[in-house]
Image (tube, rainbow, N blue to C red):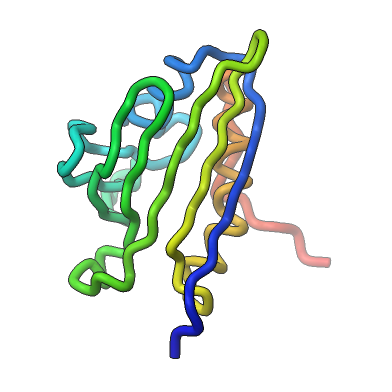
Length: 154
């Protein structure tokens, strides 16, 4: 039984331009370098987008629609597991806000409309910090993090 919705907000500062950050999110060839996935769309509001595993399997891991695209400041997409794509309640929303901040960028990622007791809400709390840390590392140093790493057993 669903107990409502929840949200997750993550803010990071990146030594890059707004254009570089926006492209890192929307260009499949760049996203694969720090995320291990490609975000595939034409980025026109109303268009589909897919989050595709960049390895040999090329499995579609997430699907959604582009709600708003205002490069390089803002991107809003819906987000769902493909197995639940036919269920309107299974979709959450992700908003990327990219703002110039002195000689860097403030990236705010808000993932909301999540089913509070769902697996997606639990997963993104671990996933977004790792992915966005990898994005920051990649844009600042040219080296990404291993986003598929697993914690060492205690």
